Image (cartoon, rainbow, N blue to C red; front, top):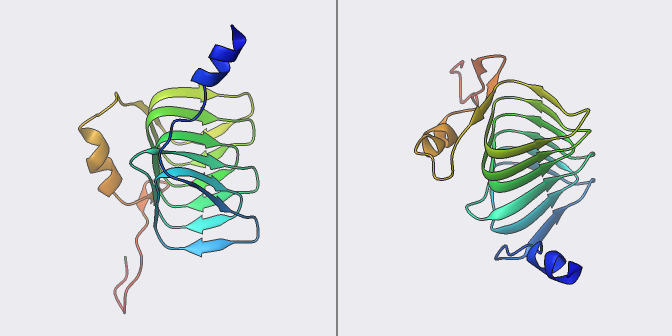
Length: 149
């Protein structure tokens, strides 16, 4: 009986597994399918149309995160868009707004921003993805040339 339960819980995500180790720092946006496991640092947006994203306690993202399934146990400075299941573990620290369908929050997780429920396939989701990350309500944009933002 229990073997059937374990088989049903297996990850059915298409694509491979990407591991970004603790000694790795990436500057730029990342798009993936499959599974991504982040132990290092990303400065940029992370997105997946179909996938599972896991952020370990040593991991950090400065940018928006969008994936159907997300597990967080590290730091994110940016907005989170999760169309299916979001899991915030005890060491999760989120500085940004969280848009979710289903959420699990463990004791000790910290959210410095708003929570907004979004149903699967929400029409708001794509518009929100196109919006830049915010820091205390101020838009975070890159500087180019002599232009100040």
